[in-house]
Length: 465
Ligand code: SAM
Ligand code: SF4
Image (cartoon, rainbow, N blue to C red; front, side, top):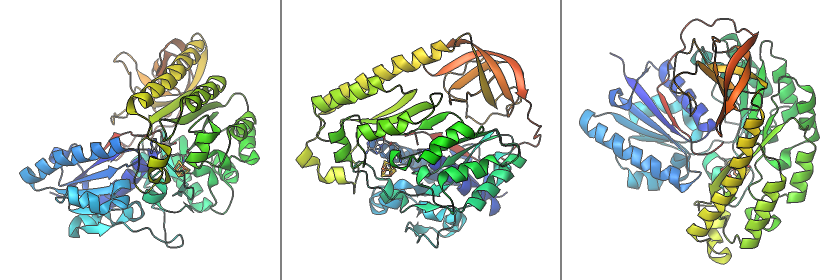
């Protein structure tokens, strides 16, 4: 019997994608995927440290795996952001961990699983090689994440990413396009280009040119990307939303706060006026989403009121709003005493206000679509093998689900299969999804009958990514 692994992933799409690459590296080395941690010889926890809560969840998961280790003698590895930024603290708190690896060493996972140890340094830009995706892992899926760049050269004062992911490195465009062509060959129809600051891409062409090159891959129906910085939104990228038909009309462009004084303390490098000018250039049909932080150090009642006023006049399709979480190494934690901590109750009240404002608006937008048709790419359907990726709110009578062009979740009744592009007549809507009936198949996916290779991965999303 060969050895088996199980990966528990915390965090964003970047972590999800890294987990896939680590699973593929283990498969190449002869490991197989286990259905659950209880059945595995190796449990690998891929961590997120964007907020403190994510770290707390990591230590509670490690506690559970420690018990399995004492019962069954399995190995435990820790990868990802906590591994790279807090190795010593991690090993002091969880000395039973067998190995630790940072995001620049994903391909070393089989070697570390055998010999143990710590590999968390960041490689020089010239030395760094992006791990290649194994397209077979995506067989049977309609969508895939494709890494375009990694790291971040900004220093937003709340954010730990530059310390956990290192400097920006872009992947050569030819490699990105080749990977996408190989994914399309196994049936993938939509790709999301990912990177911590994806629109500052510089892998031999601009990000807008990369989108145009990707759009030329035959058979690819949809392109998305995440996450972008407002300062890197170029007129060229805006033009892509006008004239690249495969680019979906959804743009996640985090503003973080609606008051200039807070943006300055956050070191975001733009004012609200500049942000508004940039989003004003986007075509009207583009669904705009954003991230907001409430309770940032020193946030006054007036600044919160400015935030609410900005959010009220900016027609966001959806918002991911977070309570500020002090992070090690960051600029804001060093200034906490000077700027002043916002009392937790106040921060929670402000967060609640932001969420209520957006929830009412998102629900209205969804309800406005009742009675009309939406185009949906089917991600789970009648032919769905099932991999635990069903979105929230799926009911047993819905035959399938997918995403609209704007990235809304749509449940439908109908016989479409994974990868089909269909039209759905919307019959009802909630805050989280639309629901309706399939009316037409717009583009039938060619069967990619062979079952896709299973990766033992559990996901626990922590941020919008
Ligand atoms: N690169 C993106 C940008 O510039 O907007 C952000 C990526 S970050 C991984 C995802 C989101 O997590 C951020 O947009 C921010 O809203 C949130 N976030 C990051 N650090 C945080 C902190 N210390 N406390 C609360 N939320 C935080
Ligand atoms: Fe980089 Fe975004 Fe974090 Fe700012 S918020 S440091 S741009 S990842």
